[in-house]
Length: 222
View 1: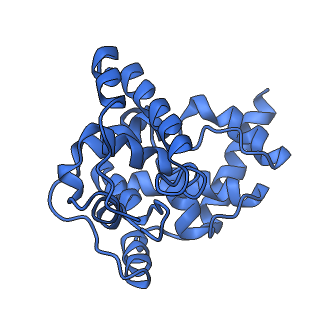
View 2: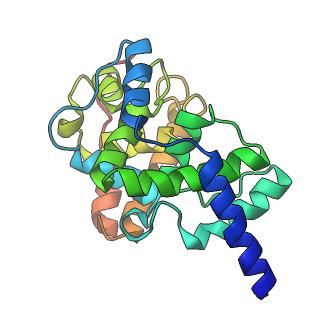
């Protein structure tokens, strides 16, 4: 056991040296936005959308150093088998998108873990979440939360209601499959999952979530 621990630490040190610094993370996000002709978030982070994304994608965001120990085993198994078993934090997802071009090979997943730790050291939680929301692709040609909120609903991200925020958060897993314009039934089912997660983390009561599920989306995209 001691030998395994020592080997793991040595491997982590080596990986730390081999992976790039992440001081340019914001520049990389801005370059993606520029390529998509999409605006960055301005002002405070959008409260409802942030809550919905965290509840669904990384409910322990505020309590881990970039990598959630509870997801390490699943991530390790996924790296070995090539099957994504979940467990990736927002930091890991952002690292994979910015530095690994979304690759899912064994070395890419190991690199994403190390880069996630570096992101946590170099950037505040608010900065990481802002970069994640700016970098995310929400389908229908919308890159970043600002373009998605305006494109789908005609409102800035800070004015999204719970129904709209839950819908957008649900798109992150598979934007094309859950496109509310092309696949409204799938989008509604995914929105319900997000609302269930918001109930699980205490952001909404069950009664509130049920009311939100019945609210119209107010789509303007066509």
